[in-house]
Image (cartoon, rainbow, N blue to C red; front, side):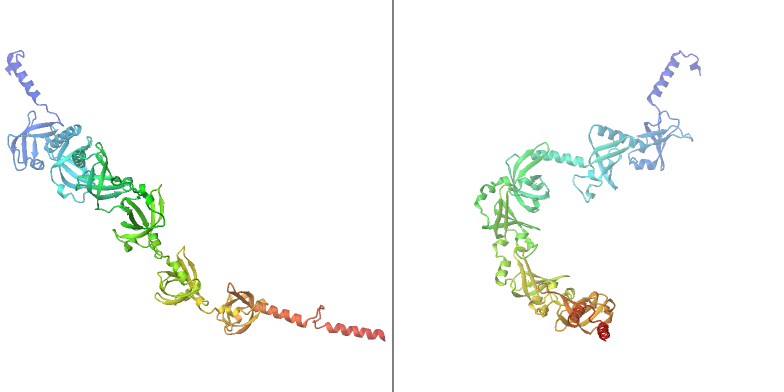
Length: 578
């Protein structure tokens, strides 16, 4: 210890300088990344030497394996570790190679994020909402949302798994240590570079040959140019000179059409095209066509509500399903025509302001309802076959016509309940009916079956109100009596209030059925086929007749004591005479 006797001696100063220089080289501080030298490798541990530490740090061999460094280290090589604790309660130094690698990786990610640079990574697994991406340089794990994997939906991403590829850093959370990346941005930016070069090839006025219909939208139609080289939009207003509600009215997926370039936007990388401008406006010579004249048209598109036809190339018009046939309702154009057919139509409307032409196919044929009216006017009897039956009517296909007549259940029979009568008929039955009404404009025909049969109501043709008729009681209930006049097929209800004058006798239960009784006609309307019967009325009429025949105008004439007063008067006269 002689060196310390003289502090100002050269030896003491030299020792002080050496000590200070040694301590300044290695700054030991918890939470910092330091380099350690591998001194020994065993089956379980890796021993390190770090200058300035009291003891050797020890790493678990599995930690080295997890970061894929086991094949790279050997005795004497350097390895970066995070100094977590200089001395724990046992006096050991605690270090971590994994945490050091993550921190270094985070530094690199921050640098790339600030410089807006892409990083190299690979998708290693799927997770909820996206995939996990491993940073190839540092092994840091990052999250890529499913919407950021590609610029178009992918059902299968197996071809992207474990493949080194570029990703863009879109979000970094320094507090939580989370990173979010996007592959979509890289793909889109690459496509933009390629698309910009492609856009430069097109100029306004160029004609694109054989572009393929790729898809529709409410505002236009998309076309594929040169097998995926470019997608272009033809706006709805540039499809046709005629009015178009939706592109699917004109185009089918996969069709090929020539396009005229009308705009090029190099900033938005868009090319606008037109189809209608490839041909002159057909409405400039619409005066060549006249209303109510027949023309040949070509079917170019078939829809659920009709078909689109061309009077000439570029001049299209809608043939609505309601104008296809006189007799068929909601007929499908697919069953009548196919694309390319030439059919006869009559122009029914020309609207230059709205640029609309309406045509009709059925007007080229004679209205079958007019033919029916000429051949079988109202009142004629015809035959037909039942085509359908519902809960209140029958539809009858008239022989020789494609017209269905409407036969209401009330017109089936004069007697019985209409609902019960319907059950007597089946689809395919042949019936002879009478035409009751023909509406040509509404395309309706009403027929009747009972009108071809004798009218049982004619039994009342020689009857009048207050006439007495003999009826047979069919049944009785709380409402009254159901009776049938003798010689008539109709049944009538005599209400309870019309059974008798005396309320005590107006009991339907007095009748059990089968009785023959007399009743009077209380109401009769031959035109409306309406009649009512009343027993009470008959009693009233009979009483009135009896009073008129057997009664005197003097009051009390028919009383049993009327003769007694006469005898008393005679007796009084005799007494006065005596």
